[in-house]
Length: 125
Image (cartoon, rainbow, N blue to C red; front, side):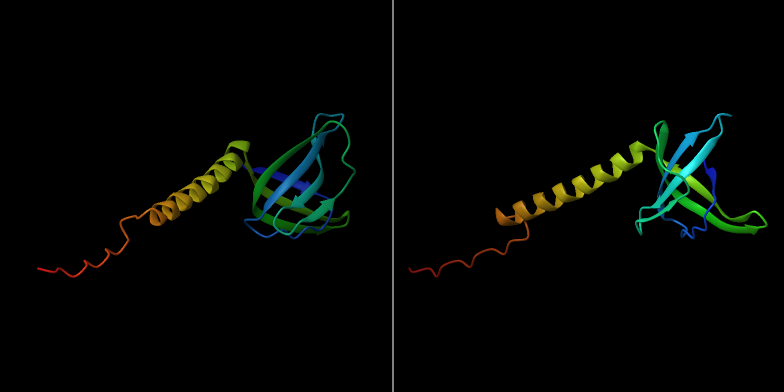
């Protein structure tokens, strides 16, 4: 489920970038975004200090809109949250690719099917 977050700073984050969002609940129970970190460029947009009782989550930017008004400049981001299972799956796939590459190298070293046959020695009658 996509989430719309609004921060009170101009933050031009490109479509598809992964972001880390730190937010906390205010006294009314509404979520207030304190920090947005672009994980691709490592740029941090901070509106407030990260304190106790914050929640951190990671997502991918779908839309970014920078708004100007009399109150100032704000950024509206539409973010698709990426759960921890997706991050673990990415790590597992990288591990599986590395294992498959290692198996291929080992098979070639021990005489895999790609090896050329040795020439037969000449026969003496």
